[in-house]
Length: 495
Image 1: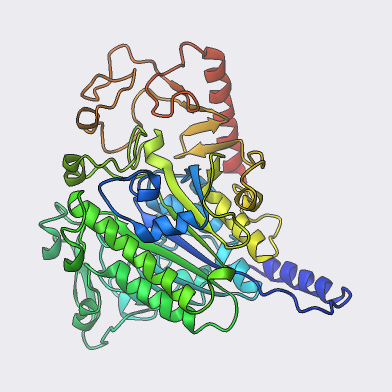
Image 2: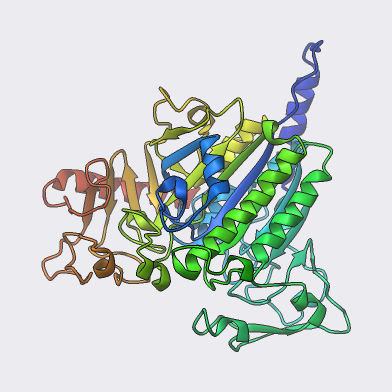
């Protein structure tokens, strides 16, 4: 972490020491567990209306805390959102390229701020924020201690998969070393389809070979269960307040639930994978409850972007993004509006709900406020502290009034502006017909109409499913928002 952060924190600590002593012992600092699912849609959970899957553990979490209905990932794909969570910054501020470490040396990151404040910090699961300093991973990267990964971002301990379970290498990395790596049996990344992906993920993204023991320790059908169990064991060993970052793999493709969950849902293998994810969340919740930590632990569960419409769940009638138009990669609401649940007994009212606007870049300042950590002036420039909203959802006005979606569209109040005519995503509009989606820019099959307007404007309060483009009806609003979008993008790039 850069020197200025240490100086600021040390100065703050000195100031606190000089204050008059309190005869009463200060209350213990709260623990924080941040769970980030991968491609979990707004409609994928029972507490958000899903009928074809059962998610009792996550539903219990929601009933004991708050459920947000207008929370958004800053991007509609995973890596930029993960950067936004840990740095509190929009992803276009990053200067990273290739496969190297995403963060810059002078960036202020959430886990490091918490560590400097006396927290034990750990990360388990999918990293996907680069490893090493080379834009392209060198052939020998994984066969020696690896610099610049989760530990350099402020985690005392990490047990991570480098990119995601569709990308090689298909091993875990513990701190800076491939888990179970035998130096006599080196790991090699090659470009061919891994055999276990053929049935569930067409093409794959390459393969890794060698490193027999390391690969055997990586059971692709039990990844979330494994990291949940490891996180739970780590939690029981802590003697000081802790922060756990737990980015799960499900329900991102390849969809590979373990045998005990196959056939357990009514939404095909996708639903089974969701139910396995819920069980993994339950492992962690049970652990903190058994260790008497639940009352003093803030648990947040969210997703890195909207859900994908997987064929088996489409056939079953399950809508990953509920009533929202779009899916992962889209700038429509289905691409980035995500579940957001927070529980902190005695602080966050049980069974509460809020429809106020929240961005996942807000997690950094919100968690810092929760823990009492000193937040340096330049930290989390694109985040705001949402703790007052979480603690007092009734009567608290919206803290955030605008945000950039996906780097290319603007939300302001009830309005959202998109500067192009179509879905602005990578996966097309194949889901229009099976789900009966309607949008004034497209026909029933999702094809862009010849007379579609060149820009889009929707009022989400009146039209949450984005059926009717209002750019022609309210040209002045569209013009103002277009100018504001360019202004924010220009300002952000200069910071």
